[in-house]
Image (tube, rainbow, N blue to C red; front, side):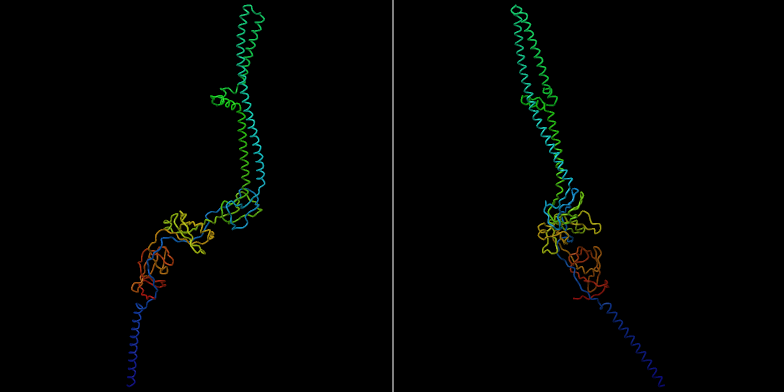
Length: 459
C-alpha cells in the first residue's frame, strides 16, 4: 500500500513537471516571435536627397586629334634621292621634304626648251618679214603715187601737143608747112596718146590689191584722211605676212606651254610641305623607286588640335557651334580653352551618341606641347546654373536606363520607390522625379532588404 502511494506521487510529479515545461516553452516562443517581427531590425546607413546648384554643362571624355593632315604622294614615277629621315621632325611650310629623280622628265625639259627656242626664232623671223613687208608696201604705194603724178604730167603734155597739132593743122591748110611736117606731128601725137594709154593700164594693174574696192572686200573701212588710208593699204598689202606672224605666235605659245608643263613636272620632283607641323609617318626609304600617287609621307599640323567627345541625344540638341568649353589634359595644371566647332548630324550606330568636335585654343596647344591621341576630359558650357535634386549613386538598389529603385525610411520602416534619373554629377545622380528634398534613403542597401522591413539607423 505504501509502495503504491509512492508510485502515484511520482507519476503526478512528472506530469506536473512536463506541463510546466511546455508552458514555459510556449511563453519563450511567444516572446521570441514578438522580437523578430518588430524589435529584430537590420542596421543601415542613411543618406539624403539634397538640392544642389549645378552649372548647365555637358561633360564627356575623348581624345585629341589633329585638325589638318596631309599625305604627300609621288607626283611622278621616279627614284627617291633624299627624304626627311625621322618621324617627329618639325616641318615648316615650304620646306623640302623629299627629292625624286626621273631622267625622262629631265630629257623632256631639254627637248621642250629646244622646241621653244625654234618657235621663238620662227616668230622673230616672221615679225622681221612683216616689218620688211610693211616697208615694201609703203614704198610701193608711194611709187604708185609718183607714177600717178607722172601720168598727170603726161596728160598735160599730151593736151599741149594736141593744141600745137591744131595750130599746125591750120598752118598746113594755109600752106604754111609741108605735108611731111604735118604727118610727123600727127604721128607724134598718136604715139603720145598710145604711151599715155599704156601708162594708165600699167598704173591700174599696179594698184590691184590696194584699191578702195579691195579694202572693202577685205572688210576694212575706207578711212577719210590720207594717213589712215595709207595705213589701211599697208595692212591689206601685208595680210599674208601678218598671218605668218600669228601662226608663229601660236607655235611659240604651244612650245612655251609644253616647256612650262615639262618644267612643272620637273619641279614636282622636289616635294615641299604645304603646311607647318611635324613629320608623322614615312612610308619609303631613299633609293626606292616609286610610282605615281604612291604615299611617301604624312605631315600633321600640331598647332591646331581638337577634342572629340560623345554626348547623349538630349545634350546634342542643346549644343551649338561657337559655345565655350574647357578641356582638361592630364599633366597640365590648367584647363585648355576651347569652343564647339561641329556637332555630328548623325548618331553612332552602336552607342547612339553624337560626336562633338571642340577646337582647342592654338596658343594653349603650343604652350602645353599637346599631341594628337592624348586623353581629354571636356566640359561644354550650355547656359546659366540650375537647381537639381541629387542622391548618392550608392543609394540605388537597381537602375535600368533612366530609371532606378531606392529605399526611403519613414518611421524606421523601409518604403521602396521607383525614381527617374538624370545625369551623373560626380558620385551623385540627378533625380528628375520620385523624390523630394531632404528625404532619408538607405545608403549602400544590402541584399535581402525588403519593403516594410524595420531598420535601425547607424550614426
